Image (cartoon, helix red, strand yellow):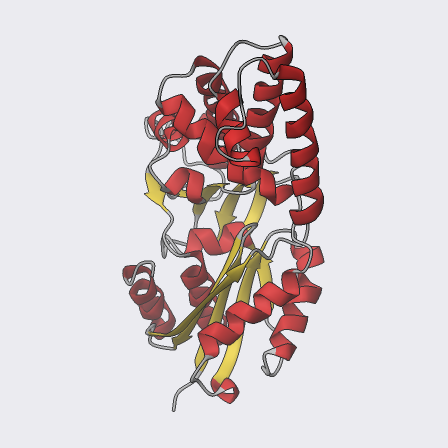
Length: 334
């Protein structure tokens, strides 16, 4: 029996794991809750659950290496190594930035850039399959501009501003109240009481589930924007503006405009994260702006990207690793 390699993508709301052969065939898949060390209370437990799911029916002794793509790699190493041990695997996994596995899961090119907007948001310049520059990715409190958490926080704030008169009327009052408190929560003439109920519920949810919970409100504001609500449209347009600014920093737009290669040798710009890979209003705005200046590639399966990096690390310079990478990318998302 040949060697197996593990690839893990741990995001803010979900963790995906694949186990692959050295030829690029997927032997197992697993999925669990989020594994962001900043916003998830117990990332190691979810990493372990995803690992065990992917390894079901396989011999752990065959695993020759693994790569975990996680946000905040300095803090993520300990939970990743603990999950690896608790899953019965020998050695240690490599822990790399989540942006790198997103890039590797979309293209076999060594150079380019990636823009991620999911629970969090970050941009990165990739050179020789290494992250050489970052923009944003500062976490929900200090950055992650245009992310799901960013959108959710502003959706809740816009609803509260509308209730107390500081903001324009918006359907977000009813939509956010419905999402947080339940259908029919926003009634006539209950402004102050509704505001207090929303405030208490939002803080309680964040305390219970972490800041990533705010990202569950992102679809609410995106849907309202598609329907034409002006306040929601403004929130989503601002998110798109900030994401495009992040992308320009790492994609070297100034160099492209002069007809030169961008820092790191050019390459595609990979769009990753559910807000940019699904048919959202935000994705439409970002693609319309960035697509005029660079080649865009949509991310597919970040866990597959991590697995491809694991195979490449085990077989450096071996054409079989490049072949396996292309095979993995071609298999798509399950």
